[in-house]
Image 1: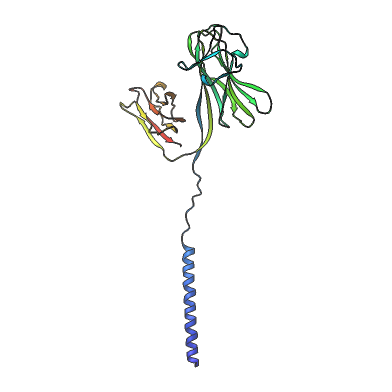
Image 2: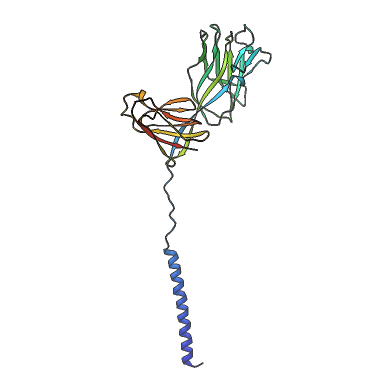
Length: 289
């Protein structure tokens, strides 16, 4: 190979090498210069909301402390009554209990009792009790009664408030205690235990509008099955008085709504309603589960 050929071969090799290097740099530069995927660092909006639920305990769930106690469970009336016309006071024959299985960290807030009392000398008395797992010690968290002088028949006690009791199943168990001294067909029908849970919920998605205008007197929320929902109202200041404000009805239970507020409920059938000719109202609803 002469000198001319050597220089030509060397030049071509250098040219191809530089071409490959430049191409690689261009490709690499293109990769580096390509825009990175946009990763949002904005947290999803969240709100801590309070969910209020009711636990209904039938009288059929109660059992006597004394297995020899004489009592009746009337399934037709859904009543627990005595099977005799006289009974001693403050004996085991009068005491019935129903165990409770409560969600841990639920906050117990209220107790309401339903039944019938025809006896001016006796009463239908309920206690919510908490007992230690490790030792034989129980405390009464709240107590309510039909009162001894009540004899008008069917009754519903005022809700007895439970002060800041957070369920702790690790240390305690919970039960209802019935002390029944009312005769003449008197007895317990059911107990309603009100509870609340503080839950972190994501907001901003699935928010829908509701409105009541003209001759429309109710708005049925299109939920399927048991649903947790957050219901909010717009400004209701244009309505004449509070009786003109809309109401939320959940499974037959009525909840009063206020201006510019939200409530979280759990239920199957939900509707927002108002009286006729009280002016328009509006707001939003959001299913949370």
